[in-house]
Length: 219
Image (tube, rainbow, N blue to C red):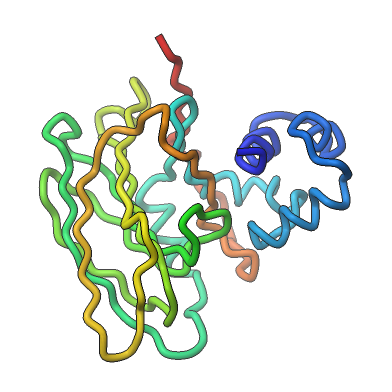
C-alpha cells in the first residue's frame, strides 16, 4: 500500500521525493529509492518521466487509469522479447453485461501483486465472452491479470473491471496453459495495482495521447 501511494504521488503531484518519502512512511530517501527501483524496475525519477505516466495502468477504487488501445499496442510492439524459451497462454474472459463494449488489457506478471512492467500482454476490445492468446511469455511462475474499461465510461463514471488467476501458474515447455477470467467491477477491498507498460530499456519516441485516467469519488 505504501508503494502504491508513493507511485500515485510521484505521478499526480509536484512533491519532491523527500516529501513523498516522509508522507508515505519510509525511513530514508535511500531506503525508499532502493526498494522502489528493485520492485518497479526503474528509479522514482525515471517513473516521473511523462512517457511512463502515459502508459500507466492503475486499478483502485478511488483512482483508475488505462492507456488507449493504440498506445498499449505500440508499447507492446516496442517491448523487447524476453530472453530464453517463450510460451503462449490462451484463455477466455467474461465481461458482465453492464460493462458493454470494453477495452481490455490481459497482462502476465511474475508476482501476485505486480509492481513492475508485465513480462507479456495482449490488448483488444470485447463484449461479453472473448477468447485471447498471449505470446512470448517466458518460463516461470506467473500471474495473469485482466483489466477492462467500458468504452462509454472512459471519460465519465470511471468504472473498471478486474480479474486474475490469484495464484501463480507454472509456464514451461510442454505444458498447455489455459485460463478463464471472469471480470467483476473493482471494489474498495481489492488490492490496488499501479504499473506502467513503459519498458525502461526502450526509448519510446514521440508523444502518446493522454491515458484515460479516472478519479472516482466514494458516495
